[in-house]
Structures are given as C-alpha cells and as structure tokens.
Length: 158
Image (tube, rainbow, N blue to C red; front, side, top):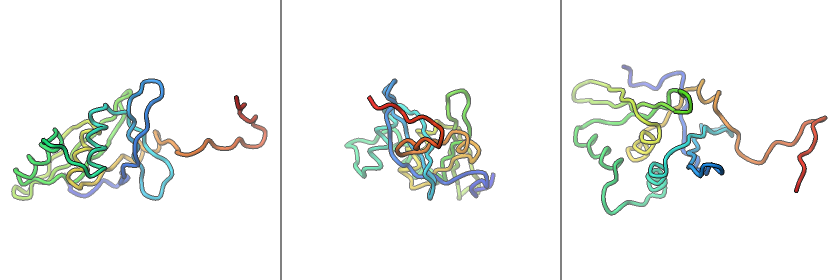
C-alpha cells in the first residue's frame, strides 16, 4: 500500500458540530479548505465529547480510549498517517486508518468507525481525508437558506 494520499480524496478539517433536532444525535461537520459545503456525519455522544475535548486543547485526568490508542501507536513506533472516510453503506459511514511502521517498512490499513478515526487523527496530528465522490454525493451547504429564484414562492414566516 502506498503512503501517499489517494488522488480521489479531499483533505478535510473539522468545522464543528451540529445537533440533529429530531434525534438529538451529534453531527460532526467536516469541511475541505476553500469550500462552503460540509460533510455531516452523525456520531455518538462519547465520540463527540472526545473530539470536542481534543479541539478545545483540554486534557482529561486519565487517558481516554483515543489517548490509549495514540500511546499504543507511539509505543509500537508506528505513525498514523491519515484517517479516511471511504464510503457510505446504508446510513453508516465507513472509514480506515492508514498507519506507517517505518522500522518494518510496512503500511497498514485498518477498518474503523470514522468518528474514532477522526478522534485519533486529531490526537496524532494526522490528516483527515474523505473520498471525493462520497463528499460530492453527501455534501451540505452551511449558512442561511438560499433565496428563492424567480418564479418560486417565498416561504411563509409565522
């Protein structure tokens, strides 16, 4: 496996979070540089807390799961190169970790939940990538609703 990012992927940044109004499930928002659209990924509250903790720069008194994973990688002299969000099956996003083991000259691809992979990438300073086709199919625009075009009725304000 090549350590270079795939040509068919976009490098992403964590834009922030939203909350699904109906289910109250956290939504992680990933955004490529220079784009207005985001990729929304519904994640569990635990993963949302772990990601938010890392983004805030705060540390927990005891290591959390993703801290443990980071320390394991360091102890094994392995490096997380990037986390990839690769596909959507049903309503479930799929991901993988790309890990280098320089002392062995090997690269590993390990299946993961995107939320866990992103939490680990943030702790390790690794890149986050999303398949271009997946992003284009699932992207959402942030901001106020677009104004109706000519001939479309205005929305009623209650």
